[in-house]
Image 1 (tube, rainbow, N blue to C red):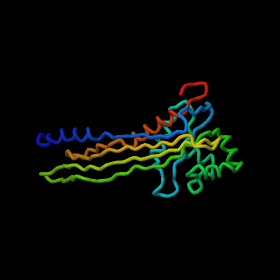
Image 2 (image 1 turned 30 degrees about the horizontal axis):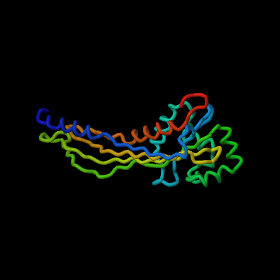
Image 3 (image 1 turned 90 degrees about the vertical axis):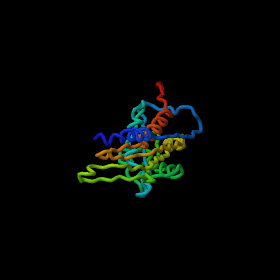
Image 4 (image 1 turned 30 degrees about the vertical axis):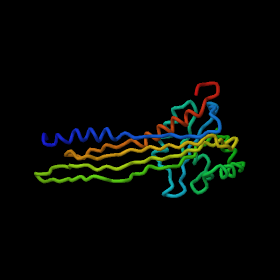
Length: 222
Protein backbone atom coordinates (compact mmCIF):
# COMPACT_ATOMS: atom_id res chain seq x y z
CA UNK A 1 0.00 0.00 0.00
CA UNK A 2 3.02 2.26 0.53
CA UNK A 3 3.47 2.73 -3.21
CA UNK A 4 0.00 4.31 -3.41
CA UNK A 5 0.67 6.79 -0.60
CA UNK A 6 1.18 9.61 -3.10
CA UNK A 7 -2.52 9.42 -3.92
CA UNK A 8 -3.61 10.38 -0.39
CA UNK A 9 -2.54 14.06 -0.60
CA UNK A 10 -4.24 14.13 -4.00
CA UNK A 11 -7.45 12.88 -2.39
CA UNK A 12 -7.19 15.65 0.18
CA UNK A 13 -6.81 18.23 -2.58
CA UNK A 14 -9.87 16.88 -4.38
CA UNK A 15 -11.87 16.92 -1.14
CA UNK A 16 -10.97 20.56 -0.57
CA UNK A 17 -12.22 21.33 -4.06
CA UNK A 18 -15.63 19.77 -3.49
CA UNK A 19 -17.11 22.83 -1.78
CA UNK A 20 -19.94 24.51 -3.67
CA UNK A 21 -20.54 28.19 -4.37
CA UNK A 22 -24.11 29.32 -3.78
CA UNK A 23 -25.77 32.65 -4.53
CA UNK A 24 -29.30 33.69 -3.56
CA UNK A 25 -31.07 36.60 -5.26
CA UNK A 26 -34.58 37.74 -4.45
CA UNK A 27 -37.07 40.47 -5.22
CA UNK A 28 -39.95 41.63 -3.04
CA UNK A 29 -42.31 44.62 -3.47
CA UNK A 30 -41.81 45.33 0.22
CA UNK A 31 -39.36 43.95 2.75
CA UNK A 32 -41.85 43.95 5.58
CA UNK A 33 -42.43 40.40 6.92
CA UNK A 34 -45.47 38.54 5.63
CA UNK A 35 -47.66 38.02 8.70
CA UNK A 36 -49.19 34.57 9.00
CA UNK A 37 -51.45 32.93 11.58
CA UNK A 38 -50.43 29.72 13.30
CA UNK A 39 -53.22 27.76 11.55
CA UNK A 40 -52.40 29.09 8.07
CA UNK A 41 -50.42 26.98 5.62
CA UNK A 42 -47.78 27.66 2.99
CA UNK A 43 -48.04 25.08 0.19
CA UNK A 44 -45.29 24.04 -2.23
CA UNK A 45 -45.89 23.16 -5.88
CA UNK A 46 -43.25 22.34 -8.49
CA UNK A 47 -43.45 22.68 -12.25
CA UNK A 48 -44.23 19.34 -13.85
CA UNK A 49 -45.68 19.95 -17.32
CA UNK A 50 -43.23 17.72 -19.20
CA UNK A 51 -40.47 15.25 -18.40
CA UNK A 52 -37.70 17.75 -19.17
CA UNK A 53 -39.47 20.52 -17.26
CA UNK A 54 -40.19 18.60 -14.05
CA UNK A 55 -38.75 20.19 -10.92
CA UNK A 56 -36.27 17.94 -9.13
CA UNK A 57 -38.25 15.79 -6.65
CA UNK A 58 -35.44 15.43 -4.12
CA UNK A 59 -35.08 19.20 -4.00
CA UNK A 60 -38.84 19.60 -3.44
CA UNK A 61 -38.73 17.22 -0.48
CA UNK A 62 -35.65 18.91 0.94
CA UNK A 63 -37.21 22.37 0.65
CA UNK A 64 -40.42 21.27 2.38
CA UNK A 65 -38.37 19.79 5.22
CA UNK A 66 -36.24 22.93 5.52
CA UNK A 67 -39.27 25.21 5.62
CA UNK A 68 -41.03 22.97 8.12
CA UNK A 69 -38.58 24.14 10.77
CA UNK A 70 -40.36 27.52 10.79
CA UNK A 71 -43.22 28.52 13.09
CA UNK A 72 -45.87 28.17 10.38
CA UNK A 73 -47.41 25.12 8.71
CA UNK A 74 -45.95 23.83 5.43
CA UNK A 75 -47.98 21.67 3.03
CA UNK A 76 -45.89 19.44 0.79
CA UNK A 77 -46.53 19.16 -2.93
CA UNK A 78 -48.32 15.81 -3.03
CA UNK A 79 -50.57 16.72 -0.12
CA UNK A 80 -51.45 19.99 -1.86
CA UNK A 81 -52.18 18.31 -5.21
CA UNK A 82 -54.36 15.67 -3.52
CA UNK A 83 -56.28 18.29 -1.54
CA UNK A 84 -56.95 20.45 -4.62
CA UNK A 85 -57.48 17.65 -7.15
CA UNK A 86 -57.83 18.06 -10.11
CA UNK A 87 -57.11 21.80 -10.39
CA UNK A 88 -53.38 21.68 -9.67
CA UNK A 89 -52.47 18.55 -11.61
CA UNK A 90 -49.49 19.01 -14.01
CA UNK A 91 -51.71 19.65 -17.05
CA UNK A 92 -53.77 22.36 -15.31
CA UNK A 93 -51.43 23.85 -12.68
CA UNK A 94 -50.61 27.56 -13.15
CA UNK A 95 -47.19 28.73 -14.23
CA UNK A 96 -47.93 32.44 -13.85
CA UNK A 97 -50.15 34.71 -11.79
CA UNK A 98 -52.67 35.28 -14.57
CA UNK A 99 -53.44 31.55 -14.76
CA UNK A 100 -53.63 31.32 -10.96
CA UNK A 101 -56.22 34.09 -10.87
CA UNK A 102 -58.29 32.24 -13.48
CA UNK A 103 -58.22 29.02 -11.43
CA UNK A 104 -59.11 30.84 -8.22
CA UNK A 105 -62.24 32.30 -9.81
CA UNK A 106 -63.80 28.86 -9.47
CA UNK A 107 -65.89 28.95 -6.24
CA UNK A 108 -65.07 25.27 -5.56
CA UNK A 109 -61.33 25.99 -5.66
CA UNK A 110 -61.66 29.01 -3.36
CA UNK A 111 -63.77 27.04 -0.91
CA UNK A 112 -61.30 24.14 -0.82
CA UNK A 113 -58.33 26.50 -0.34
CA UNK A 114 -60.16 28.15 2.57
CA UNK A 115 -61.07 24.78 4.10
CA UNK A 116 -57.43 23.71 4.00
CA UNK A 117 -56.27 27.08 5.43
CA UNK A 118 -53.80 27.53 2.56
CA UNK A 119 -52.85 31.20 2.43
CA UNK A 120 -49.67 31.11 0.30
CA UNK A 121 -48.35 29.00 -2.53
CA UNK A 122 -44.65 28.64 -3.37
CA UNK A 123 -44.40 27.77 -7.07
CA UNK A 124 -41.02 26.26 -7.87
CA UNK A 125 -39.05 25.22 -10.93
CA UNK A 126 -35.46 24.18 -11.50
CA UNK A 127 -33.07 21.29 -11.87
CA UNK A 128 -29.64 19.87 -11.10
CA UNK A 129 -27.32 19.28 -14.07
CA UNK A 130 -23.93 17.61 -14.51
CA UNK A 131 -21.54 18.70 -17.26
CA UNK A 132 -17.92 18.50 -18.37
CA UNK A 133 -16.74 14.98 -17.47
CA UNK A 134 -12.92 14.90 -17.34
CA UNK A 135 -10.11 12.62 -16.17
CA UNK A 136 -9.68 8.87 -16.47
CA UNK A 137 -9.89 5.87 -14.17
CA UNK A 138 -8.53 2.40 -14.82
CA UNK A 139 -9.68 -0.70 -13.00
CA UNK A 140 -8.15 -4.16 -13.21
CA UNK A 141 -8.03 -7.47 -11.38
CA UNK A 142 -4.58 -8.64 -12.49
CA UNK A 143 -1.63 -9.03 -10.10
CA UNK A 144 -0.01 -5.85 -11.40
CA UNK A 145 -3.09 -3.58 -11.29
CA UNK A 146 -5.47 -4.65 -8.52
CA UNK A 147 -8.36 -2.27 -7.94
CA UNK A 148 -9.00 1.12 -9.52
CA UNK A 149 -6.61 4.03 -10.03
CA UNK A 150 -7.02 7.52 -11.46
CA UNK A 151 -9.87 9.98 -11.18
CA UNK A 152 -12.90 11.43 -12.94
CA UNK A 153 -14.37 14.87 -12.34
CA UNK A 154 -17.49 16.72 -13.46
CA UNK A 155 -19.18 20.03 -12.77
CA UNK A 156 -22.59 20.16 -11.09
CA UNK A 157 -25.05 23.04 -11.30
CA UNK A 158 -28.25 23.53 -9.31
CA UNK A 159 -30.56 26.34 -10.42
CA UNK A 160 -33.99 26.92 -8.87
CA UNK A 161 -36.48 29.76 -8.91
CA UNK A 162 -39.49 30.18 -6.61
CA UNK A 163 -42.44 32.57 -6.63
CA UNK A 164 -44.55 33.19 -3.53
CA UNK A 165 -48.21 33.80 -4.37
CA UNK A 166 -50.82 35.11 -1.93
CA UNK A 167 -53.90 32.90 -2.46
CA UNK A 168 -56.19 35.38 -0.69
CA UNK A 169 -55.26 38.64 -2.44
CA UNK A 170 -53.92 36.83 -5.55
CA UNK A 171 -50.71 38.84 -5.64
CA UNK A 172 -47.03 37.99 -6.04
CA UNK A 173 -45.28 38.45 -2.70
CA UNK A 174 -41.73 37.47 -3.59
CA UNK A 175 -39.49 35.95 -6.23
CA UNK A 176 -36.28 34.14 -5.36
CA UNK A 177 -33.52 32.44 -7.38
CA UNK A 178 -30.71 30.28 -6.07
CA UNK A 179 -27.67 29.08 -8.03
CA UNK A 180 -25.17 26.58 -6.66
CA UNK A 181 -22.19 25.10 -8.48
CA UNK A 182 -19.19 22.94 -7.74
CA UNK A 183 -17.04 20.07 -8.97
CA UNK A 184 -17.47 16.43 -7.95
CA UNK A 185 -14.82 13.72 -8.15
CA UNK A 186 -14.41 9.98 -8.02
CA UNK A 187 -10.82 9.01 -7.26
CA UNK A 188 -9.42 5.52 -7.47
CA UNK A 189 -7.19 4.41 -4.60
CA UNK A 190 -7.68 0.64 -4.91
CA UNK A 191 -11.44 1.23 -4.45
CA UNK A 192 -13.36 4.12 -6.08
CA UNK A 193 -13.95 6.95 -3.60
CA UNK A 194 -16.71 9.45 -4.49
CA UNK A 195 -16.20 13.05 -3.36
CA UNK A 196 -19.44 14.79 -4.28
CA UNK A 197 -20.07 18.51 -4.13
CA UNK A 198 -23.29 19.29 -2.20
CA UNK A 199 -24.83 21.70 -4.73
CA UNK A 200 -28.39 20.46 -4.23
CA UNK A 201 -28.34 20.56 -0.44
CA UNK A 202 -26.63 23.97 -0.46
CA UNK A 203 -29.27 25.33 -2.86
CA UNK A 204 -32.03 23.86 -0.68
CA UNK A 205 -30.55 25.41 2.44
CA UNK A 206 -30.18 28.83 0.82
CA UNK A 207 -33.67 28.92 -0.65
CA UNK A 208 -35.37 27.34 2.37
CA UNK A 209 -33.82 29.78 4.83
CA UNK A 210 -34.68 32.73 2.60
CA UNK A 211 -38.30 31.64 2.23
CA UNK A 212 -38.65 31.13 5.97
CA UNK A 213 -37.34 34.63 6.59
CA UNK A 214 -40.23 36.12 4.59
CA UNK A 215 -42.85 35.05 7.12
CA UNK A 216 -43.58 36.23 10.65
CA UNK A 217 -46.26 34.58 12.77
CA UNK A 218 -48.83 37.00 14.09
CA UNK A 219 -48.14 37.63 17.75
CA UNK A 220 -44.84 35.69 17.58
CA UNK A 221 -41.30 35.85 16.27
CA UNK A 222 -40.13 35.62 12.64
